Length: 298
Image 1 (cartoon, rainbow, N blue to C red):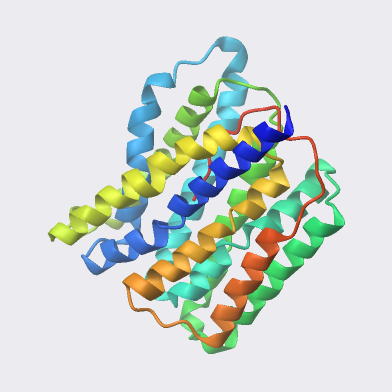
Image 2 (cartoon, rainbow, N blue to C red; image 1 turned 90 degrees about the horizontal axis):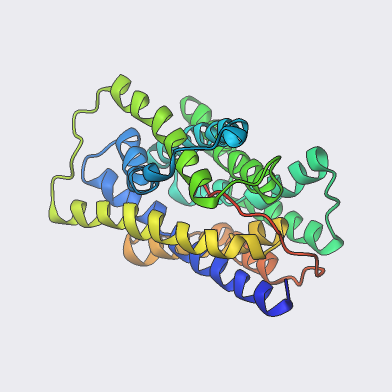
């Protein structure tokens, strides 16, 4: 794979990151319209699950990998539910910043579990992101009864990091559409029972704005960026893919500040700038992934 292909892959991942960054914005609009985290989480994944359901049939020799991919989807569903649940009760900027620490966890998981030694610049980028998160996530300022939500919010970035690292070099390569089908079904397997168990009082938006947000989160923040991600991620190294995802943070925070009138304090602005700086630190050129990613939780 040549440098031009690798560069094109990074641009596609950046486009995907931009659209993925709209998830918190559309999610908060749906919360304002009366929907709960469990319903928003289901809507977030239902369109990809329906689209890829046609690709569920799996050859016998690929079924073990399909089961591993299904497990990734289940873990991802739990992580995104924890994220949306925390977004309902905690300061949005803090929750968003926690989620976008996944490049740090990606480096750590790749190093500890897959013996992928990160470059010096990758470590610097990860350190900047960790410092950024520490500026805004201050448990002392959060009521004690909300601390479990703060802790559970870290599930999402850990799951995303594990997914990125595993899918950069899975135990067995299977067709991308087949992998996406099993990941999507894994999301729904865990999220539908959660929604049923909580018995939400409202399952449909109550206003035109709510319906617009529903279309936004299912199509523009889920299905469309997933396509760009699937096209670009195989051409980009795993750690670089995770760092490029930091652009989602910038989109998420600015969308909240500009479109939802959410004020950002000096620590949150500083954290945002540190993460953007981490994004632009030049990484040592490494061989792009030759395998195909299966998807992304965000």
